[in-house]
Image 1 (tube, helix red, strand yellow):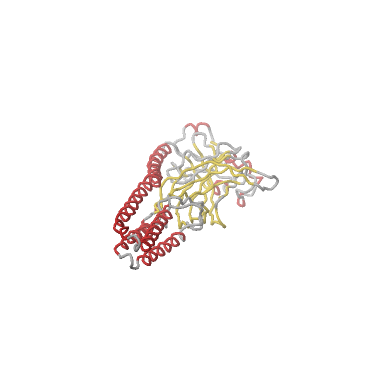
Image 2 (cartoon, one colour; image 1 turned 60 degrees about the horizontal axis):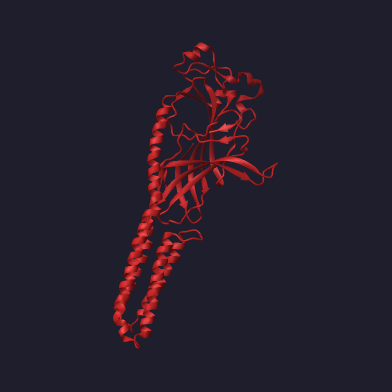
Length: 403
């Protein structure tokens, strides 16, 4: 399970974003299984009874105060972040969970990670786009050794209160999890190796108000002003005014390009600016023809009003079609994300109700290992109903499946 604690600045031009995440992995560890002093205590269990430390038999094999999880005594999936850039800051801690009724031990690894993550942005709908911000979790082991599975008892989510760029982005609450395999072309000892992976994807919708007011609106107003040039006599400075508006639109096109990476397709913003540009080109060509033919065909100018009506009607019709296209195409993705948020709320409520029926004994791994000759009593253990919003990957068995 993964929680986006804080989503920082989303760099559209360089296709990366900053994030502070919390990652929790959970897998079965038989070496840490708790044992009851008697069968009667296990059957009559109501609260944490005295549980013997199962590592007593292993005491001669290790030094408890210097034990680390990376040692060979405990299996570890060696999780990695595949799309992290640079060296992220990580804080790692471990706990042991004992699940009733048999109190089998599960090793829980918790990571708080802060760093920069790469994300390929889909900008076809810019500035009405909804972006996927994902974290790819993989491991240093192959698919034959371990299987990464989303936890059925925990919910990955986004803490929207920690969104640092909320003025530009609307953060959705849900997180989609997808399994995948990552193939490493060059690995030690083998030419190709497949690793399991989980992709945790959050969604953010761009707030388009800034681009609508400062680019789309101004560009459209300039294009509409070009129709006022028809009030100038044909032998006047029509052509100069049309060219001035045309060059101003070119400036807007360059300003729009600075907000985007170098992509090979047109965004919605590009289409709006280019549509205004070509309308100004058509008007400029008409003013050139009108001035050239005004002396030879004076009656041609009497029908110039039909040119104005045709071009203006075509422009308004194109604006309406564009608006419906944005609503049906780009808007449908936003509505889909809103429905997923509603489904996420229902799923989270159902899982929390199910978890309240279970009791999980949780103890720090260091406390469990560093006290080999004492029994843990009720004051030493912590009962957790797992109502906290932590993220989880589980492991089904010791050989070696993680969820």
